[in-house]
Length: 167
Image (cartoon, rainbow, N blue to C red; front, side, top):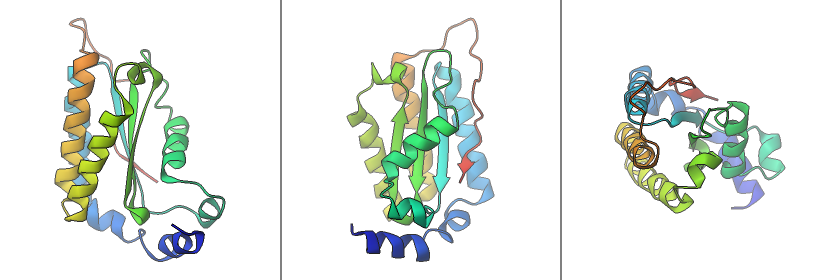
């Protein structure tokens, strides 16, 4: 995608999609799905939605992946006892989804598995199925985390907020 096309996309789209596609009841459902699923494993799931990037970031070549990694760091998703945080990041203007996993998870779950979840989310989103795509992705992420990071019987502290991040 050319820089000019990206600038136009970020200027004229994305900003109005956030509240329409992710109304307050859906954000509450996402939060509940994260909270419920985290009881199954020691992983921490964060869900971030960004309508569009600032033009300076578009002009300097910031990609959805690099922005997701930046949000991962800024939100402290890496700051868990077992290095077991993941970030599901949506960039609405470019219709991009990224999943960034901490190093503890990356040792056990290949990026291709996260990319498959992202692809499925994009398929749902292209059909206007924002709720289904989001909740299914969260369920699939919890399933992968439960396979490799089952919750101990002694308790499982919630290390990061479950509420979606709106950027």
